[in-house]
Length: 100
Length: 100
Image (cartoon, rainbow over all chains, first blue to last red; front, side):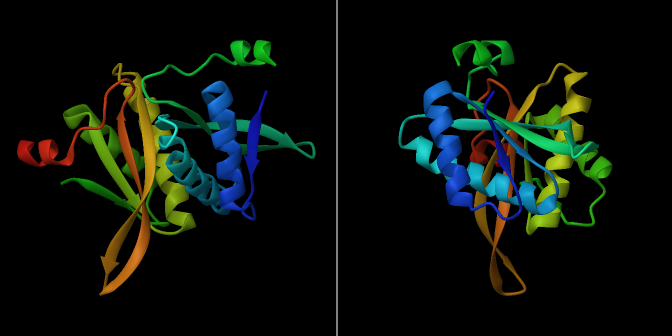
């Protein structure tokens, strides 16, 4: 499992580099953020990553969804952006885990 | 041109309804927002719209990009989320305009 966690203080270029690296290797990445500031950084990082990956012939699309995560014993609602290559189905989680 | 503009005060359910309506008609929608609060509402609205559209057999994906917009004579950077159906290419802008 390789979830890229983004906070409001994350540097977008660093997150974008992480997304691009995971996409090149697995053609599938998950970006998780909690709160407006973090979601803003996550979306901006995906835009940057998209630019990096277009040069490699990889065109990414993303699908946002709500996920419940537990932090310090409290359940919070995060937004998970699943990034995949256009035209490819999302890789099932099981398959990703087997690859590790 | 049917750009759905989202602010930090937009109600996510209303925006989601607009996205779902445009997607059912055109299989293509553009959601534009400026600032972290607005981008947060836009992403949440896309998640809700995704839920509405899955019931119609439409699975959406989105692609964010930066766009420059002029507001009151000042150029600002907005984030545009292009929403399309998974597996379909983004409809060229010209084609959308011809349909109107």
